[in-house]
Amino acid sequence: MVEFLSLPLSVLIFPGGLFALGLGLLIKGLDRKVAARLQRRVGPPLLQPFFDLIKLAGKDSLIPAEGHAGLFRWVPLAGPAAMALAAAMIPIAGVYRPSAGLGDLLVLFYLLAVPAVVLMLAGAASGSPFGAIGFSREMTMMIAYELPILLVLLSVAVAVGMAQGGAIALSLSDIVAYQQVHGPFIADPRMWPALLCFLFFLPATLGAMPFDSPEAETEILEGPLLDYSGPLLGVFKMMSALKLVVVLGLGITFFFPNGPDGILGLGVFAVKCAVLAILSVTVVRVSTGRMRIDQAFRFFLKLPLALGTTSLVIVLSGI
Amino acid sequence: MSLISRSFLSRIAARSPWLYRINAGSCNGCDVELATTAFLPRYDIERLGCQYCGSPKHADILLITGVLTARVKDKVLALYEEVPDPKVTVAIGVCPISGGVFRESYAVAGPFENYIPIDVNIPGCPPRPQAIIEGLQKAIVLWADRI
Image (cartoon, rainbow over all chains, first blue to last red; front, side, top):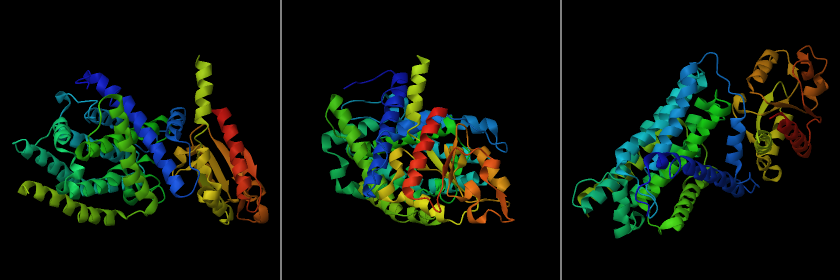
């Protein structure tokens, strides 16, 4: 196991930055391919997201006349930066252990909110009414899914913390280490409601089909992204690819981090990411329609909230 | 070195043409054909890397259907300006080419080529999906030369 890589290296190259970007784009390509096959189409090549990104780098970037040019141009860069940092905080069992200096679970939780904030600011800065609608919907979705995911996070942290004799374990490395000794949480019935709640959270935070109303291209023309073009749009694509890896990696850390050492462990991690993405994003998005924003909001305040609470109560009561 | 890598990158970029549809006063026939071409498994154009986008600012290839009516003329020309360079325009159906059955109407502003350069014409009323895909492939070849 590589105990510590130097901080800039882990944020920029592995496992943040370049590695996470490559993995994220590959999973996005797999997602499009599998979605096409589920609809009995041929589908794009596996490397299509890479082609898209290279294409966008060579296009013009238009700045809208009625928008705020400075904010419009610089705010997208905060997205990939925050996500590369977050990707460096995700441990990969047997391969990579983030250094304690990067921060704990709470820092990661706040970093996860950055892409939504970036989309909101971008939508506001573009000066277009569709961007403003996207802004308000993004904010509504964020309020809806933050509470259930916080409950999932607490369930896992408290379960590990109580087993260690303390109250709450906020270090991701501790969570991984606990499951390597005591078996993964996916096999622990106490955590099944939390796992289900996490599966609802995934498409919401990634803006996938049943919960994609902030960026609905058929009704508000991709909302905040409407006015972006060329390299700046590419920055948003990079942000969503990195976020995909961070959120999938977080799920794997919480529920099933076990894996072999070395390069094989890396492969197992990538396969787990791909399987989780296909089950919770691809299959769901090809088989459902889009929820209205008020329906999605109410949905998250019912079932996922109840599931998250159930897990937390069971864990706290120590059964 | 820069020359080689540039042609390599543009060959890669040519595999990702994003499409934007403008209905400039069509009877909806060509639009239905376009939707069919894109979404039916039989004529899946996503295998060429194509993708419909909601915003003209994301687009590379502009698909125009319908006669240019006097009422939407300014808006269509404004939309054309919104598509970032390099771009390719494709006229789909006989209407944007000549006006079709509407050509002498007082409500029609005239053939598209009087206003914006059209790169590929796909005649038909409506054109068959195979013809649309062939036209798209020609447009992609043109587009690859421009990036």
